[in-house]
Amino acid sequence: MHTKDFLSIADLSSTDLQLLLAEAVDLKARGWNSALRDKTLALVFEKPSLRTRVSFEIAMRQSGGQALYLSPAEVGLGKRESVADVARVLSRYVDIIAVRTFSQQTLEELGNYADIPVINALSDEEHPCQALADLLTIFEHKGTLKGLTLAFIGDGNNVAASLVLSCGLAGMNFKIASPAGYELNSTIVERAKIMAETSGAEIMCDHDPYRAVQGADIVYTDTWTSMGQEAENITRLKDFAMYQVDSALMALADREAIFMHCLPAHRGQEVSEEVIESRASVIFDQAENRMHAQKAVLIQLLGGAGILPSYR
Image (cartoon, rainbow, N blue to C red; front, side, top):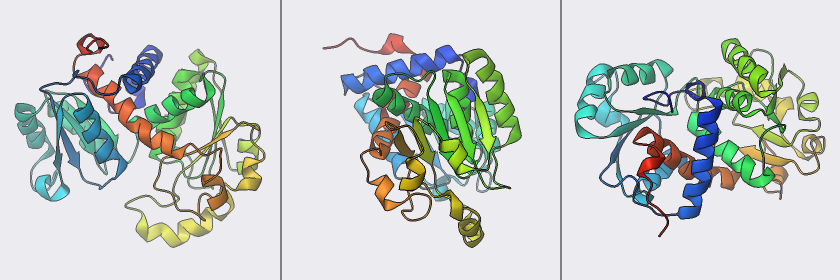
């Protein structure tokens, strides 16, 4: 990787992406290793999470390192203590930081002041670790990435942003259908289209979920109301009412299409119970692959493939 930090999928080149995915496949096959022996990860969270915390902690444990969880009350980024001071203090104690925050600006400030790598474990703008896990899951089920079509149905949120950038890098077609007013950030879309020009992918933004899903290899959705948007819940339920991924919508996708969701899911809202429990659903593979994709990121930022032990 050509940057100290991993704050956005845009930090990667197509070669970086291929390397991380190949390493994740290898690490998943290896199981436990000692690549991160004597290394410590600080998990700085402003938002709670099941998958993010557990996947990072176990990724470090299975790689010979350790993780230290710091709750919002313990740190108080930018409130109890300045972001810059937190970055410089943690740089004296640990080897790497993963941050789950409400603001991309907080991540960037941490990266600017920290002497050690900083990982985006989720922000308001992106969720790059989730996107890596998603591509790993797609590769496992489809055997390739290039030329596939991913249809994202719902909010043009942080997950969608990282996915469109990932698809642009990987040569995957990306189609998104969102209600008016909930579209993907135009700057992100333009950046993805520049990447897609090189990789041969196509990027399409639409309001019609039926048109977006037509012939897709992957159908993806996410919660309609994310953490921090609870006050908008009633409005969002109304605005997204026609965007549920149900059996009728899935029937328009390719016969071998898979269904994806980054979780937590709200059955009966963004996805029907029938779809999420169907054979097409790979949501728990995605959840598991967070750990393996993050192992690859941690190892790359802390020394690269050269620190991987050989097979026993």
